Image (cartoon, rainbow, N blue to C red):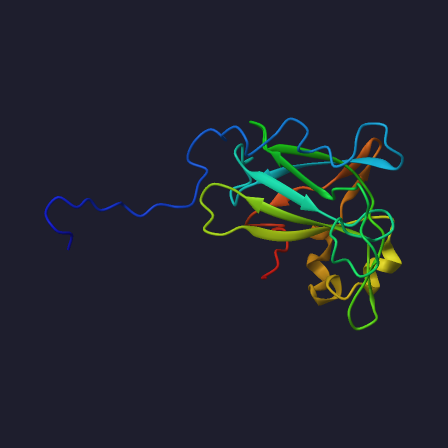
Length: 189
């Protein structure tokens, strides 16, 4: 019981509770690479809630290796990715849509000598979520690499498709379903 003069705060879910503040998103946040960069691809999608409705106030982040499979981090044992930042952030619009301009990353070695298929790591933040969700986007033209991927192979076969983007004439499509039918596979960290 609070002391006289103390206020209690009603329980609430994690935000955003307000319009996204300046600084959380920036104009070129979805531009992992510049328009016209060699190998640039567009990834588009929509975030849906458990009722199948678009989520207009979600934030997605991607981080990835470059085309050679190297990260923009000085501790990458294979050498850093140079000027490639490998990170993007995009808020969803009123229709729940997001987009990123990036490049297809190269495959990644694992500590046990296997290889991970090219993929993008994705974080999803949205209203009503108590913690971030983490997933991956795999590429549809990498069937053999996807089949051998040590992470993707841990996912039930009938759900793996929720992690593979769909080719479109002008890029790739990857929808995120937070719950319900066709729910995207999310990973515990």
